[in-house]
Image (cartoon, rainbow, N blue to C red; front, side):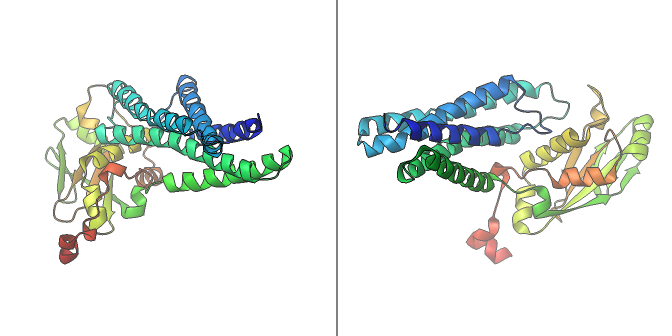
Length: 300
């Protein structure tokens, strides 16, 4: 019974950390309230596991520790559930996320449950080592939990496209039916009415990698698809089902490594368009660092 207050404080800290990391943004996932209920419950289970580990070790209950570690390994199923859910939702998207983006989101949701375990574990340790009074323990746990959540959340934050590349407006041009941005051919727009829409409302962005590592990262097809999807989600897209000529398109210039995005947004706001491109996350699976290899350093 002596561990009960510590278990409650640590479990609460891990649960609140999971709640803090469960943010609904422009991607509209997880949905409310069903998705929240699932993730908060799983986060509560993770927090409880992290909270129990410390008293189990102190009481030398090694069988319990082994069981808790085995239970924590089951959070790998969270990734599979998220992956299948997002794949099922993919058919309803006007602009697809792509498999690389789906896998990245699934990894994030799995990792956040592990973070709730870490927060609960750290708070449980602080509670065991902290003051004897309940209010003193609560104060120490609050400070330690907030610090651990802030630190782990910061470590989870990845880069944005704007961190590894420059983004600027580019001009849309037509060579008969071929839509070009600078010297890169983007697509064939056969109907004159569609070409008129691009001339009137279309926007194009040039994404200039800041170095060889950024160039290799942006060359990933999943990253290119993520740019098209996220920009469309943030500022809207001027299209309906079956209008292939208005699907946002990302193409790469092989000689320079620059990416070109062309689309017809719902509102032709240039500043919002460029901001949306800069805020697209860099996918974990797309990151490449050729300069860390011997061959890459020789070519730098």
